[in-house]
Image (cartoon, rainbow, N blue to C red):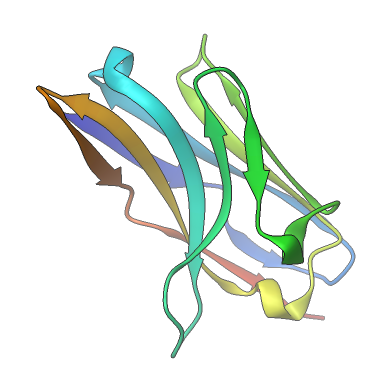
Length: 119
């Protein structure tokens, strides 16, 4: 089992910055990849960024050059640095971990942290 707790959300002005954190606990060694997803009202949950165990990263086109995903293995924490956010980035942001579970993979989700971009 893996437990994920997000923090750092809030109100930010367009062009500002915000850093989200996702603290992982439990079977940390079973995690093979982590990522950030978001869901705006009326929309489906969408991928924002992912980071593999080797540090390889992937971003949705709309956040490339503005957001940076990273992880600190010594703190069992993943981050999403949000620079120059736009109003369309407003959403509930979720942390996800993909972990080995026996012979299969299992997804674990955090409870979400709200990000509102507004002046």
